[in-house]
Each structure stands twice: as C-alpha cells, then as structure tokens.
Length: 312
Ligand code: DAR
Image (cartoon, rainbow, N blue to C red):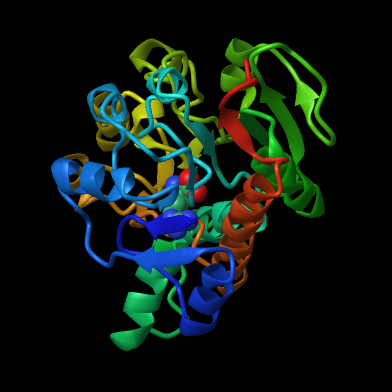
C-alpha cells in the first residue's frame, strides 16, 4: 500500500513518519509541486495526504490508481469534490484538530486589537511609562458576540465568550440550535454584533457572503474577526470601511498580500499570516487526525469523509 504526503509538511517529525510508515510504504515530498508533478505523484500512490496543493477538476479527472486522499486541513475549498466523486475517490479532511487553537486565537487577536497591545508594546520599548491616552481600550464584558456559522469552532468561541460575560448570537444555514449560542437570522446577527467572528467554510454559497451591502449593516463601533478564508468577505469593501472609520477594527488571519498592503498603515487592524490554527497541541492533534483518517480508511470504515463511494 503506497501512501504519499504530497507537499511540504508544516510539521512531521521523525517519530511521526515512523508511525505513518507502519500503515504502508510512506513517501514524503517536501516541496510544493506544480500540478503535473502533483498528478504524477498521486498516480503512483494508493492513498495521499494533501496540505497545500489545489486539486481542481482537470487534475482529478486524470487520476489513476489513487483511491483515497485526506486533506490535513479543516478547509477543503481547494478540492473539487464533485470531480473527486466522479473519479471514484474518497476524500476526507480534519475537522477537529484546531478547534480550540482557532477559538483561542479569536480572543488573542481580538484582545490585542481592542486593548491596543501592539502599539502599547512598541511605545513601552521606546521608553514610555504610564502613558494612557493613546491606548484607550474597550471591554468585552456585556457586549454581544455575533458568530457567522455555529459549528465546532464557533461553539468553542461561544464557550470562551461566556467567560468574558458576552452574549453569543449566531447564524447558520438552517437555523438549527447550537449550544451556548442564540441562533438568529444573519441580518439580525450583523445588526446586533459588537464583535463579529466568522466561522464558516468557503464554498459556492458562502463565497462573498459578507458582501459590501451586508458589511454596511454592521455597527460603526463593531470589530470583525476573521479566522476563516478571506474570500468569505468582500475584502475591498472591508478595507474601505476600515480606512474611512465605518468599522472600528478588524483582526484578520487570511488576507491577500495586496489587501494587507492597503491596511499596512492602520492601527485598528491586526493581521496574522494564517496562524490561527498553529499551536503546539493543534499540530500534534493534526497528525493524529490525519493518521486516524488513513487508518480508518484502511480498516474499511473511513471517517471525516467529504465525498466517496456511498457518500451523498
Ligand atoms: N486553514 C486551516 C489551516 C490549515 C493549516 N495547515 C495544516 N493543518 N497543516 C485549516 O485547517 O483549514
């Protein structure tokens, strides 16, 4: 059984390689391959682990041999699931490893933003002492947290929010109940939020969900936290709102370099390069989840499956 790790593992220590090697003939590629190279590697394996590579329909339609792939990520917007199904592939992902890491990052970046920690740190290093006025903060206690999406990460965020004395409201596609969150229509969530945090996967229905018109319904005093794909938002509209004082601030974990460039001079914005998931615990849990995905497939009862024979 040949298993490939297709593309530049962020974290894969030797002892973990040995564990994977117990499942089959395990080969690791440490670069990020061009599409043709990726296709070649996939066609020489039975199972694949994918971290970075986009898998669009034209690539998946040319797959031979490969039966199964698991993304290391929670997100799977880079894989054309319909094309994968047509190719007879089983595709899995890792929905749980970063739940707490991302939820904690929401508050790390939110508090850094509303307590102006980065600017205060810079000022203190430059010699400031007992300097208050530039660093007026906001409190979370008593504020309303709006959640777009009410899945695993959103409910973890709501649990932390309860500790801060926040009220959590949220919207999901069907209006189903979620623990610790008062579920409301999206428009109402947007209108009422003091802090809005996004927790939805990127797909055809959520791309651009927060368009200019919806963003315009946020309170001018609101702050937005995005630890999901930037494409959920109209980034240009967001940048306009932040530069014109129409939105108090934002903590953003997935910006294009171009949009981030436009925000470079703003101090009501905190930017991180996709690190919301990246904690010591989450990166180990990530490998365990990938391992469990592979092992469950090999045992004939695949878990965390997005598409595959018999699914959908
Ligand atoms: N977008 C996040 C982070 C993926 C990061 N890479 C990993 N897990 N090796 C996700 O999980 O979807």
